[in-house]
Length: 430
Image (cartoon, rainbow, N blue to C red; front, side, top):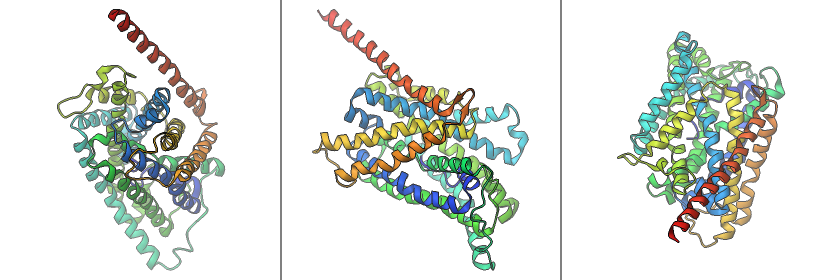
């Protein structure tokens, strides 16, 4: 749910160059990933409820903020989920540009949505087991890729001296901002695993273990391929989404390039598939709290909320044509606001429910308060950096703020409807 291997970090290399890219990828796990994984580890192990982060915020801060958490997360998902079919199509075009020419690109993206909906209807175990297999497949070419790069670095005289550590694309400041935003996106999504807590065995033990071990694994899968490219002396001045295939061709020929391209397509498909499992549980939890219509809770024979799967799939299909950078800017803005609420919920629950059983505890109260500082700073930077990113006539930031502002209005309408029903029931009883 967080990473599909090194696919997606090409823009970090192209925007920042080797030295800054390595610095960004090494520092962000400590400032961004680790605090989030510790927070998720504590809350998921102490409150392993379906709906995850929505349930935590509602319990800590009340129904209004719980609703905002749900709205921000679902709104962010519309833009987040559109990214993965974009990656799928980008790598598919490397096989043959005619495959994705014109409207075919959208049709391929739509096919990803349809197939993943069908796969998700088979249940969480089918998605989880299939995703592990896909992850192994997409990483296999990079095992060869990394091996070739390090062998070259160890055997070719002057390989380290030939690295263009500070080479980056044009527009250094804008490119660096893009690199940081893309890196944040590549390291985010830890809380998505919380929404399926009721379908996880022994969540009190497995969530903290999964969070910490996955954080280390993700960092390694990003940094090792980057180091391999550096040791090969390949220029990354024009690196962008899909450029791993070009690097693989230089290092191992057409066969390795083809394998990397296939892995990129698998990455886009696999990430969409597993995140669909996560996001579609959120409307169910909200519907059970009567924040959404009750029919959203309907499940098939495998226990899958099929109405939520179909409705979410339709919503995600509407955002498939937006550009990668714009999607990331909007996604980070909305996701960042929801993540801040989760850190606030961590502290509030420590104060309001000190007796809550916490199988995993992320330090004392002072540590719990400090965990949110790094992520909040980075979210603020992401908002500032995206201020000039345009979405038609509107800035991406302004658009994200407008989407977020819809949440309180929807909550008021929902509360008004619920109060009317409650009053009608009371009058009927009288």
